[in-house]
Image (cartoon, rainbow, N blue to C red; front, side, top):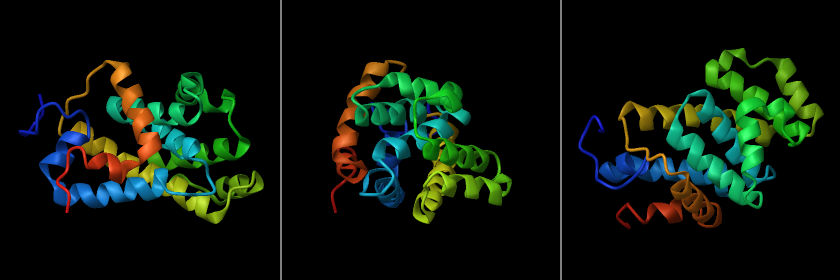
Length: 186
């Protein structure tokens, strides 16, 4: 049961966002810019970073929904998502993404843990400054998003099929478009 009265029937972050549309708008715009908008880093990779950080933070909703979005971007390959959460070093992903996940994992713990060597390794595997920036910001933002979802004890159903369907839709339509389902239109 949520700690405050949230709109019923909206899982995870959708409940608090519908409760407070003034803060939801910039949060959805940030998610759109980081995860869905055109970028040299594929959408699946950006969603995997969000999924990985959310799994480290043990946020069921965020790791499940963003894992579903990542899978939807990869022909529904849930296996890669599971492997990234379990041990990304053995996952069938690029060396660049592995280097960015090292950075994201350190940001999740404490941003000061990221070293010049971590950045050099990411660059060595082809990461641009924008991709490094975005990996750090995705990790930092998902620490906030995870704490927002869990700090209010939002409704997080365990039916993974709900997340898969939502993931497919979000992968196609993005975050700002999807937010229109539960937020008033300006």
